[in-house]
Length: 397
Ligand SMILES: Nc1ncnc2c1ncn2[C@@H]1O[C@H](COP(=O)(O)OP(=O)(O)OP(=O)(O)O)[C@@H](O)[C@H]1O
Ligand SMILES: [Mg+2]
Image 1: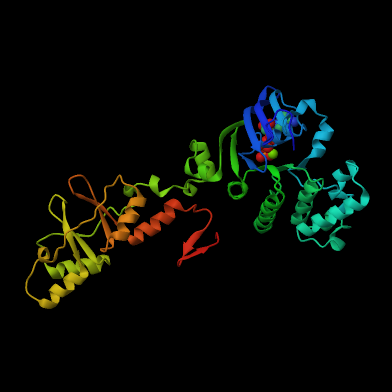
Image 2: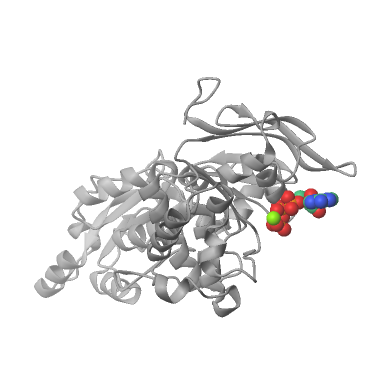
């Protein structure tokens, strides 16, 4: 759509927008730009101003100060009724008219816009099929004859009916059970992809936001605390509030940002040069490891003994010491290095363990393949979403 000020790719723009109710800010100094085709999600605790923000865009609520542009036009220069008909809107409660059928609910705005009857009917059927509703079955039903999820679908279809390029959705799936909710989220994602709508969507569910959003606006007490794409939000939460909202264990981190000291085992299984073979072997069995890191009395790493070498020594007999079976350690890593480097060194390292040492070669910890894998999963995987079991990704449980 063309715009009057040449910024055709910006569909919605808020400039220092505030809304005051009885001396209290519902929204305060909010800046926001929504680009064409973008899916922007407003998220935040109850009362933080999400609904107020949406309603100021289609002028169901008038802002106290600041400017709001839709397709480059200041909304106050537009007729509010016409503005609203141009913008799809799904309200916080489903809001179907109970005395109108499904078809009548959906074709409401097209009818107000004067779309001819035949065209409207065709459109209603198309839309119903879009969400898997057989038109002959659903067209004539009343909202009370539908489940909550079905009503919600009709609410979404109604917002799509006049084919608006911009849609505002206020917690459209808030009241639904988790399964229906996920189905509708998937449908919405597909619709958005197919029809390239611009969507401003309100939720207080972070999973929903992360799944749907191109960008997430985290709101608190009427202000935007952070506006970022989901991945950026997970990687770099702006403050504790955002972090808390994300859920502490969900923070997604890049392997480059995770230090070796965060994931290393701090109690490596060690031996000394003068240790006897039987004792060493027993220690390995007891700790279920197949290597011993050999250190001196100041914990300086001297070398490594493997169970293979040790078994050979025991077979050959004789009272011998570990020192004779010790191999040099060629690859070590420092605590401050990152996990990506550790993984790379590990891949090159036949021993299967990577000793962590300080600048004086003192042993500080160890990284094994198993710890690398399991801690990588813990640290890097958004744990709220899925977990790993027997090597398979399994659904949340
Ligand atoms: N018509 C009104 N009159 C007075 N205060 C209002 C009015 N509408 C909203 N508010 C207040 O403005 C603040 C923001 O309300 P808003 O409805 O935008 O919150 P929200 O983020 O959508 O919350 P929820 O998640 O509960 O829907 C709240 O403190 C609310 O009480
Ligand atoms: Mg609300």
